[in-house]
Amino acid sequence: MIQRALDEIVAGDGGPGIVAELRAGHEPPWFGTAGVADLETGRGREPGEHFRVGSFTKAFVGTLALLIVAEGKLALDDTVAAWLPGVLEENVPGSDSTKITLRTLLNHTSGLPDAYPGQEPPRPQEPGTRFIYSKVNYNLAGMIIEAATGQTLAEALAVHLTGPLGLTGTYFPDVADPLRLPHARHYSDKDEMGGDQEIHDVTDADLSWAWAAGGLVSTTGDLHVFLSALLRGELLAPEQQREMFTTVSTEGADWVPGTRYGLGVYSQTLSGGATLWGGGGFIQGSVTYAMGDRDGSRLLVSNLNGDWNDFSLTLARLFDPCF
Image 1 (tube, rainbow, N blue to C red):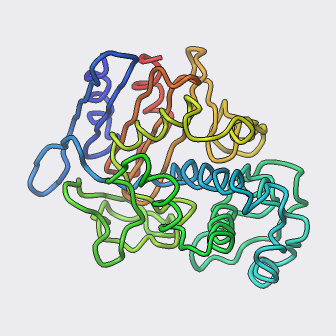
Image 2 (tube, rainbow, N blue to C red):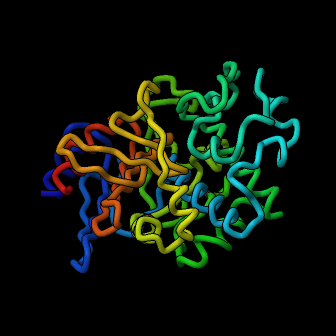
Image 3 (cartoon, rainbow, N blue to C red):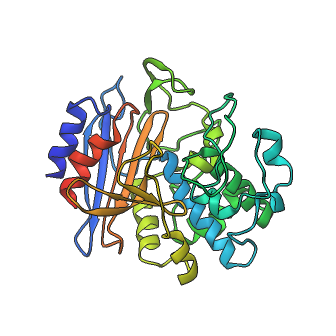
């Protein structure tokens, strides 16, 4: 069933290649692929590949922020002004960092607009009024984490999450060496600003601008370990776990349908009626999904090494039948 779905996604021009790994209870993990890792050589995709996870980075950053909150170094109601005085006002016209808290950054209700490199952001809306999905929120959250810990975001992530969990394939890439081996080539039909282009290889592109909002690299195995531990309540204390999974509506935001957003993760109700938890990630050259049951008993992680796939196609053909 899953293999047929993978074949259909690639055959339908969902991307050059796809990997998927399903873990359910005590059953042995299932891993499958379709398509290719490299359009020039035709080699297939394989287990253990490193790929850009895009916005699923937010799940790691949200969890990291809550771990630091539990240490007493941060509070969800701390304002941006308290940690980054003047930074927001200098870069986002009309913003007021005294009204924006860490919580509203993490659940995208800060009122701050989304922005791409070199793009002048529009004026923000009143904080706390509605959900607006924005990379600005998480890059600010990353800066606050650095200010609170005295560490770089990469260091804080290693100390609090990837190190303790043994996630050796999860890291912020170096510009000079973006993806460790093994990895598939990453392909895009867009430029960095989202403009249309011919399909081209973006494996070595500098996407450091995505940083805390979408800059991480990981593997299917690492994403399973992290998401399973998070959903099962093995990473966060009860108070922080409750905050992580307290959601706001995304309705009317022109975002992913059927979703509610927490502090870095979201719930999504599929067409078949099942509600999954986790997240997706779309970044130049890569589309990733990592979602599962609320109790972490059944998880599916997938990655496409091309970015012209509609998320709804992957959900309908791959995730719906599995849940």
